[in-house]
Length: 212
Image 1: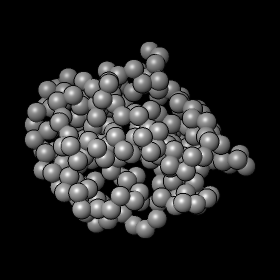
Image 2: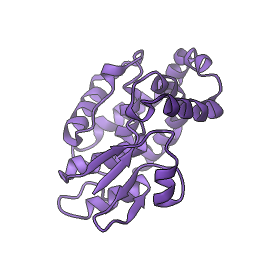
Image 3: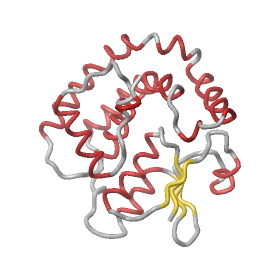
Image 4: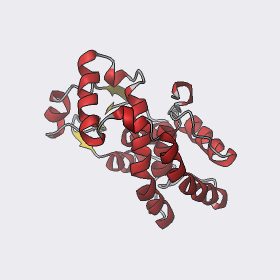
């Protein structure tokens, strides 16, 4: 099987997680951000992740990939439903997280922006969504203040949950992995331990070493 991804993409992280947890071999292929033809040929539009299954067919959508791989063998990791608390948390933090990490993603040497053309394509796309990224970068302090109460809620939720992986982890960890690129953000001991634990179990690296 082949998994087409962008390294920075939190939705791609979801798909990468299930392969690591299940210890199922997959070839990860990072596409350039400027490559429109490849995903369009596969699924009709530019969107990742995309899984090329063993029969050659293509499967898009991160959670569809997670459920497909999870059903291949035991143990299962993506059962049940996302808790109401985590669903609300995800909706509450998504915009703030995107504003924090996008200017930093631009400055990081991810493989999907490793060419001049690819970086230009990424910059054009995100500038259209967020405006001047220099201005957005200067809003870091304000954005961190917005984020703080939600991080406290997550800390409490993690403290009270059991240690078994479930569907909630495919929502939580990709967001935290993205946030690990924000140098000014301090994680609680509980949240940091969770991040390290999931990174080790899934084989998906955190971004602390690239933090800006």
